[in-house]
Every structure is written in structure tokens, then in C-alpha cells.
Amino acid sequence: MPQYSIKDHLYESQLFINRSIAAAIIVTLMLLLLGVRMVYLQVVSHEHYTTLSKDNRVKLQPLPPTRGLIYDRNGVILAQNLPAYSLEITPEKVESLEQTIEQLALILPISEEDRRRFKKLRRQRRRFDSIPIRVRLNDEEVARFAVNQHLFPGVDVKAKLLRDYPLGEHTTHLLGYVGRINQQELQLIDTSNYSGTSHIGKNGVEKTYESLLHGKVGLQQVEVNAKGRTLRVLQEQPPIPGQDLQLSIDIQLQQTALKALGEFNGAVAAIEIETGGVLALVSKPGYDPNLFVEGISSKAYRALQKSPDKPLFNRAIRGQYPPGSTVKPFIGLAGLESSVVHFRQKNYCPGYYQLPGKEHKYRDWKKTGHGVTDMHKAIVQSCDVYYYELARTLGIDRLHGFLSNFGFGSKSGIDLTGESTGLLPSRAWKRRTRRAPWYPGETLIIGIGQGYFLATPLQLAVATATLANGGKRIRPRVVSSIRHGDGSQEELIPIVSQITQNNPLHWQQITQAMTDVVQGPRGTARRIRNKKYRIAGKTGTAQVFSVGQDEEYDEKTVAKRKRDHALFIAFAPAETPKIAVAVIVENGSHGGSVAAPIARKVMDQYLLGESL
Image (cartoon, rainbow, N blue to C red; front, side, top):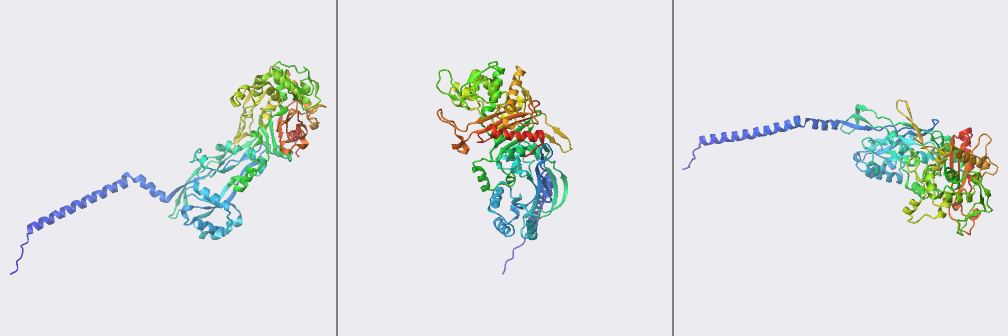
């Protein structure tokens, strides 16, 4: 007989009720957790998620400022911005970079140098930044890509302004150039202000005045679709363009000086005496700065680096040369102002000089000597023996102290980077650097601008301008004024110092002697006389290598690169000086016949408007 269990309805009912309560509690807890989460998302994190949501739709794009222009004193443009097309790739939007580049190469010429530059820039940029693979596309290349653009997602042709230097090598060392920002520069600049900007000033005026030329970045808020394409501009804060600069440089004078150097390498510095404005600053040879704007090729850069003529070297402010006899007017003035010699005091020049009790002969450039010589004759005919004696009488301490007043041995303070200090030796300098005492013979050599004594062409021009200005020394400047965006112009105030004159007559005597260097019948630069104005000057020759005691220097047998440097300093008009010029011609041999005519051409251009 089958057995049947009896159901416990009370137990089952209680079990159902317990399960229902448990389920209700679980559901309630879940709803509470969901509610808490919703409160957190909707209330506590509302601002955060609203921003994230908005960022999916709205993007901030930097608007790079337009770089300021650079003009010469007459308004001739020296640095400008020209529109150019570049082919750019955004890595995160491209499936295969290598394949894309290979396919692009079938449409447009892409060199190995282009590829190397692209890879280098890619390492420096983020994946979502666009990187140029080709720059300066012409109209035909732009059209060719436009027809095939649908085949290259993530690749675009972009229009931008590129820096251009219309006068090329004529302004190379003066203006410098702009180039791509490197890793070292990224550590120094305000990256927020350089958003969207890839270039920065590297040398010259472009580097010194970078903060003014660059301007301030702007921002653009745009709405984009799911593919990142811009739909519309929501808000815009326009960039502030860089300020324009007007230089004291006269570009015609610059070109005249460069052309006047002819086949020689060297430097020319010309200064407006009244203001300290640099009228011309030439270093030859130079190079085309436009090659550096978008990145010079490795081959071209190596050629510049390895060239024996050193075109990358700015001779005008970095070249350090023995000043030779061009320092004789300053040393003569030191003797007069120190009361160790009188202007008409006479010494005898037999063609050599010997220290008391010594056999060594310090030779004069003129073998037969100059005979009875006073300071006027010693400057006009450049007598070395007279200056050996004067230097010995003055001593190195007084020489160093007096010459330093004219800027020798220190930077002039010009508004360009990379200026050298030159070298004005002293006892302390020799003890510190050579760990040796100062010898009397070394003082004699300083007296004719040789030995350890070194000066830059700019230092010589500043010293000459100071002498012509009666001891008023003005810090040289290349930039004369800043043009603001509102059309106003800010003139830069020159910084002036004054050398104390013990006797103004001494300065007049030196000036007269320098005038007779050119205007006198026996002057070493008499070949450059001009009937329309009078020039005061001084020739000089700087040895490239030393000649032994019993040897003679024969220019005809010496290799060109070992020939003496030719120097000349001058100011004009002699009575009312307006321009001071310093010329150094490397391996030019003779200051009077090689360097002086170059200075004459520069002064003719400035004073008379006569160009080559």
C-alpha cells in the first residue's frame, strides 16, 4: 500500500515569506546601491563627467601667433613670413606609417632626408600631433595630393607661414635664423605659449629678441564629430602677433661692406658715433639661413662644418685677432694722459729696439728705421720702435688699466648672442692662466698690438667710436626701436659711459695724427684720401705666425692662409665724426692697401650715398 507524506502548509508558507523578505531586502539594497551610484555620478562627479562628455564633442586648439617682422633703418624688410604648404601625417590616425609613406612616395617626391627628419620629429611629438613629411610643396604637388587625398586618411596638406630671409647671406650672422625647437629648448621655454609653434630663434637678433618676436598663443574652441573633424568654431581667443623690430642697420651699407671684401674673408663693423647704433656688421663668408628654417640636410650641414673658411663662425663679434698697430693711437693717448711722454717728445728709431742689458732685438717693420720720431710721426708712419719704448715706460699695469676703459678685454654688451671678450692681458691674467710671471719683453709686444693681445672687430669699432666721441662710450645696439601692435614705436635708449679726460688737448692731438695717417703725404693710408671729406684712421698688420729672430717674412713664399691679417680703423668726417669703422681682412697682408679701401667704400656709401 503506497504511503503519502503529509505537507506542512504552515512551514511552506513561512519559508515563502522568508524568501520573499530576503529577496525584497536584496532588491532594496541593490536599488540603494544604484541610487548611491547615481547620486555620485549625477551630483558629486557631475562637473568631471560633464567635462569628459564635452571633450568628446569640444576640442581646444592652439592658435600660433604670427612672428614679428624685422626691418632695416630705412624700412627694408630683412625677415618675413611667407605662406607655404606642408604635407603632414597624424600617426594615431594612420594604420601603417611605413606603408602610408611608401604610397605617398608614389605620388610626391619624398627623399631620404625627408624620412629621417620625419622619424626624428616623431620621437619628439605625441601620437595625435601632425608631423610634416614634406615641406614647401608647390602648387602642382598640392593639386596632385588633393586628387588622391581620399586614399590617405590621417594625411593632410596644411598651409602655414614659414620664416624667410630675402637677403640670405647678407644678413646671416646678424639676424641668425629660426629653427625647430629641440629637446634642450623645450626644458627652457614656456611650453603653453609655444603650443602649436614648432620654431624658435636660434642665433642673432632672432634669438636675442625671441620673446618679442614670438608673440602670445591664442586658443580656439571647436566642436568635432566622432571622427575628430571640426564642425564649427564655438569660441576663439585670437593670438597676439609678435612685435616688429627696426634695426639701426643700413642694409645697403651692409651689402657694400660685404662686396668690398671681395675675395677675402674677414669682418667689417660700422657704428653711428652719436647713437651707438650698428650700421653694418659683416662676417664673410656666411651661409643661407633659409636652409635651417625647416631643417638643413646632414650633407649640407657637414659641408658647412668642415669648410676651412668656417662660414658658421661670426667673425665680427666672435673672431679674436691681434689688433696690431690699430691700438697705437690708444696707447699714445695712454702715454699722454699718464704724463709719461709729450706729444712732440722725440726718440730715435734705428729699425730695432733692445731692452737695457739684453741682446734680443725687437724689430721695426721698416728695416732702416724711422730716424728721429715723435708721437705724431709714430702714428702717421706706424713706427714700432717708438711704441716699444712707450709701452715699456708705461708698464703693463697702466696699459691694462687705460685700454680697458675703451672696452678692450670685455664684451661690448651688443644685443646679440655669442660675443667674445677678446683678451687684454695683465700680470694677474698670466699668473692665473699660465702660472708664470709677466716679462718686460711681453709689455713691448703689447705696445704694437701683438702677443697675447686679442680684440674682436666690434671691439675695435667701439673703441674707435669712443675715441672720436671724446671718451663718450655708447653700448652698441643692433635693434633701434620696437614697433608695437597698436602702431606705436618704442625707441631704445642707448647706455652711455664717459672716460675722464685729463687734458682734452691730448685727445685732439691723437685725432690730428690719425687724420694725417690718411690726409698726410707720408701717412700709411694716404691712398684712400677723399676730396669731399676728411678721414681719420690707423692701419694695422697682425701676424698669423711668429718669425724667428734671424728670419725674414717673405709674403711671396708664405702660404695664403699664413699671411698677415690686414686691419684698419677709421672715423669720418674727421672734424665732426659721424661713423666709425673697423675692418679686418684675413690674410690680407697690408692694412693700408687692402683693409683701408674697404673702410673708404663703407664711409663713401654712408656719407655720400655712393654705392659700389
